Length: 207
Image (cartoon, rainbow, N blue to C red; front, side, top):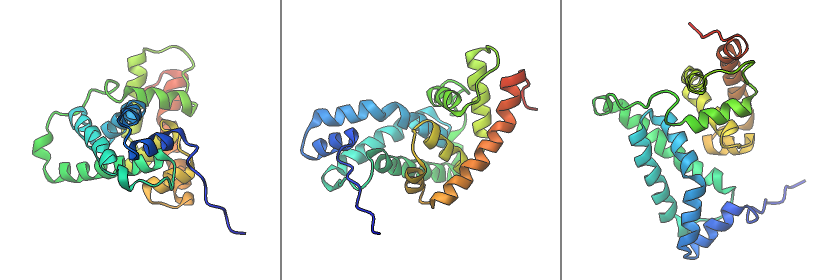
């Protein structure tokens, strides 16, 4: 049995992007408003630099606008958008690796920038505290847990728990198979549990 192609035109973001393609400037402003914060948070986790993430966020939406006439709704808008985000983030990481001297002391404080993503992860992943902790301390623990992950694991976790992508979307964005994504997320969750469960249940910080 051959699967019928999916109609993505009912996706509200796709409708906005098609309006941008047709010349609607306000539709583009709406897209930026809807996605700018999450794109920035994702790029902070790619770059460890708020300043660089802000610059890359502008570059992402510039590329979105430049690609408007070529845009076709062959996937969810977020899948298409985060392919651009990922390319910008990976390019920035490669550049930073080649030129580390240009990025000294640019890392954001744990729990400050990208805090929204970390709070969302904590709320949606099931790692809820058994008692009240300082909100900043909780964010620092989630930041520490995320930093302990392999970069690809961290990326997949953010896509699933913060951007609410399904396995298929993550696979498309990361150019992996769905089984590979499931395996990646399984290993990531095990690592997060090793760090977050003792802290959330007993207040024990990792060594």
